[in-house]
Image (tube, rainbow, N blue to C red; front, side, top):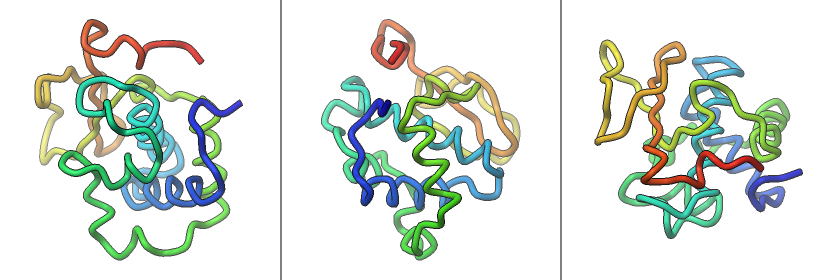
Length: 143
């Protein structure tokens, strides 16, 4: 059962964004990036109060994803990438990204905090960050 509304065009966009942001991290890295993307679409807190759809999440400005400015994002979605996108839309979560709203790729070690948000872990090159429960309780809710 989907945890956010997503039609086939939305799935394609999410699949392309997951690939463009994290393909080098393999399927699990793409799923973790997808967790962050779905969480941003699902919650109504912090920077994401007005983000209600996958296109709004992908193109949020400021604070959106760098990949939408690159040509690779605009290539067709592949079946494998659509399958991964459907998994996160259907609620699969992966540590350390299950409650994350941010991730980035630092030059070195993951900072303990990034823009005031706490690090939950690293997967390959990306560090994941989640809000405090008091700042965004809905990201921690079950589906």
